[in-house]
Image 1 (cartoon, rainbow, N blue to C red):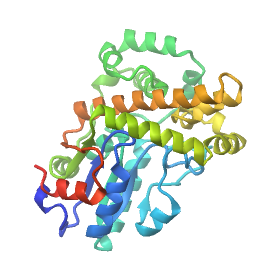
Image 2 (cartoon, rainbow, N blue to C red; image 1 turned 45 degrees about the vertical axis):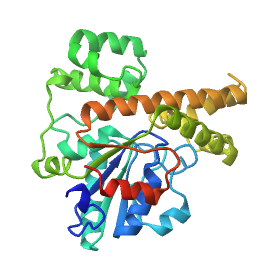
Image 3 (cartoon, one colour; image 1 turned 120 degrees about the vertical axis):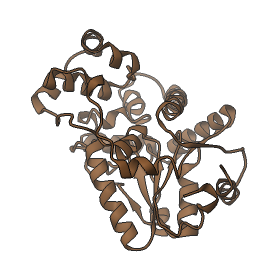
Image 4 (spheres, helix red, strand yellow; image 1 turned 90 degrees about the vertical axis):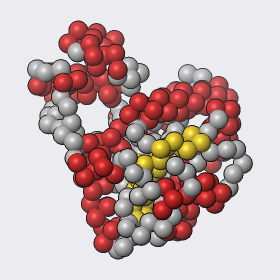
Length: 312
């Protein structure tokens, strides 16, 4: 689908909207869905969890009434969720949406899920409960040392500050005896073609993106992020190592444990979110294979849609 045909979407091919946190993806996807008759598939590794609402900027009940959303609130905090589950659920959602003669609109910032949907996951083994428990109890420094020794290529490329990815890489190496970097994905031809046609990544000038991040974080705390985190701790948040990686919740948990005051916590969440946005942009530039669309400050969603419709 050419960019100039995007708003007609007569063929109901999926549309993919990616970008860093706070860039404005969700609002644009919502307006696009209303304009062309679409449903949104969330590409967010944290919005799948019930209860993680304020800290993940999850679409509000009103927004989910306006447009049907998928892959939001699909598991509890005591359940695991991974890219393989995302692929299965996303493929099902696409089929259901197209059966209603609607257009699937993927929207989110989890680059790995986009890549997994386009390219597949190959033959990597499923998680082994015992091995995973052992790795989760191992200090990050030791895991990185093992990864550096057994698979230098992955060690150089992996996000070393992301415990989940480091653990998974070492887990696969231990289970298979092969380097993680050598286990290539089994490309799915049909999906691979889609990624070069209607896959858009939004960005903004750095100063504008940082301003939007700061405003969002202040609003999250105003809406009750601390109270939400307190409630989630009662439901097992601290035991879910994956969910505890969500920016905002970890810092608030530390605040509740008196590790810093509230003002410092808010500023730390802003800093961590800005750093995360930078990592997201780096990832999409390396792996996205998408059309980049820079959003100027103060444009409305409708003005951005008009820009998107003529973007090449």
